Length: 192
Image (cartoon, rainbow, N blue to C red; front, side, top):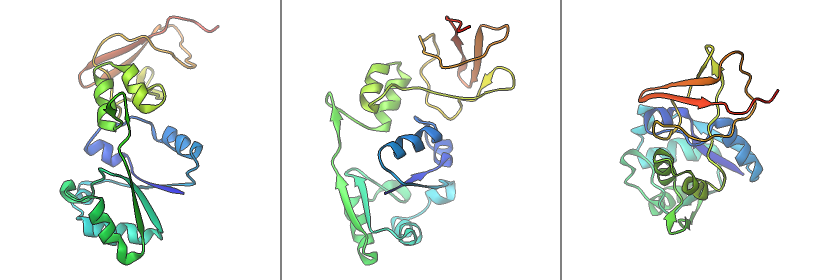
C-alpha cells in the first residue's frame, strides 16, 4: 500500500498543517501503509489540469488502483470529480474506488471541519473527528522559540496542556511568536 500526499509546499500555499510530517508517517505505518509518496505542491503544480495530473503524475507511479473520497477533486480549479478520474485513469488500466464521506455526530470528518474546531478552541469536537487528541509538537530553537508557523492554532488565550519532556533552566514559560500575537505555555509541574 502507498499513499500519495502533497508535501509542506501545499501547506505553505493553501492551509495549515494538522499533523507533523513525522507523525503522519507513523500513523500511516500503523495502519499498514508501506510507502508515502510526497510531491511538492508549488504554484506551478497548482496550475496542473486534471488530464496533466493523471498523464504526468499518476501514470508514472506504476499504480494498479486508486482509492479516493467521494468528494475528491483534483487539478486546476478543482472542478473535477471521481468520475473524471475514472475516465482519465482507464487508458492506463488504473482502477478507481470511491469511499463515502464519514460522519460522526452528524459532522463530516474533514480537515476543514477539524481546523475550524481547533481555531475556535473546541478540542473535544476536533478529537472526535481526528480519532485521537489534537496536539502540536516542535523543537525549541533560538533559546525559547518553537516554530509553529505551519500549524493550525487556536485563538490567542490560555489553554490547559499536557506537556511531554521539557528541560527548563531558570524560566517557567516557553514563548511562541505568532503573526497574531504571543502564545505561552505555562509549566505547572516540575519533573525533578
